[in-house]
Image (tube, rainbow, N blue to C red):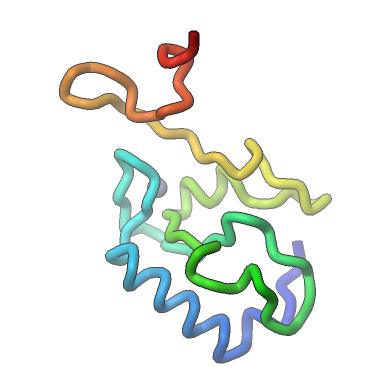
Amino acid sequence: MARNRYYETPHWKALKRATHERDGWRCVVPGCGSKLRLVCDHIVTRPNVDHPTHLDQLANTRTLCGLHDNQVKEDRFGKRKRSGKPIIAGCKADGSPLDPRHPWFKG
Ligand SMILES: [Zn+2]
């Protein structure tokens, strides 16, 4: 999706910085924590408008690394890949998956 002018505003720059500060400048996907190519992701996709909206606030943003952003970002039709849910790899010390949506936890 083409960048719109909102991403040039002080509002966005402050929100992005506050998001990264809150998240410790690390990807928030469980088990990841990467500091590589960090992006500020909108959890619920914002409308493609130039001005700040109710979705442009800390409650709707998260820090993702480049890998996880690529897994969930909007395609060219504006639809979120994987419904915006990044792949959570790895397991806990007891061997159970880190991903709460893993099939092991169903049923
Ligand atoms: Zn990540």
